[in-house]
Image (tube, rainbow, N blue to C red; front, top):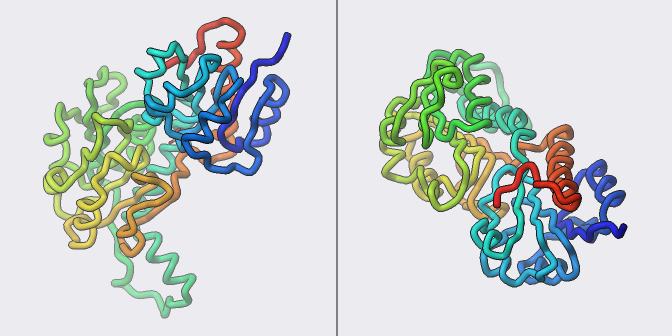
Length: 320
Ligand code: DGY
């Protein structure tokens, strides 16, 4: 039987590409070129499925232009706001994501952002590398302690819960806001707030773990930043669109907030230039899931979905 034809939009880890080459007749992207929307439509000609990442956007107008033959879009990501699911449903395209496999790696990066921001890691490292460290000083590079402080988590899904678990190990007290309250056995003592507005005044530290999309767009803006305690720390490992950059940058500049640790940005990789000059920002280039184990697992999970679909079984992580 002929192998299904697959368009793989980006370069993927070796072990994943090996499996793709074995099981699919694939159009790969060995140079890892970022494709324009027109490239995506052109390269999808004659394929049965697409393996994409969160870096490519699939709005309704692109979905509508895809050839009839395309029946599945499998994303190498847990987030799926880059795919218009409604447009997929209308076209009868199955969309899938890769939940579970990147939970632990991303929660690790949330803690790195939390610690990096609280303990001024970037400033400290930069001082050292620029050979500006004169001597040990009792008043230099003083940061904030995590122990005993409240970490507010917005979005208590898998990654939020894994972040809470880690933060408890640092002696933090967990509060959270989620669309639905978790059952008591999952809450593990975390304090639930029915609204974001109720949560924010409690948070010395705030970790954003909610999905992207219209519902969470700019949930942290000038108004909601004002609800945080003076000198709070903001961490975002979810999606850049959750934050109004202008408002966050102003609050970091004025000292209203102590620091931020950010792994994700609106418009990546073209992030708001205001961030570059802020010493109280610990910045990472969207590496939440960037471990060897996790990136392989994401690829295999995306392929498990494609394999099931082309074998005539339901895709395990079908979103449509
Ligand atoms: C995800 O899986 O959603 C990560 O942010 C990587 O795209």
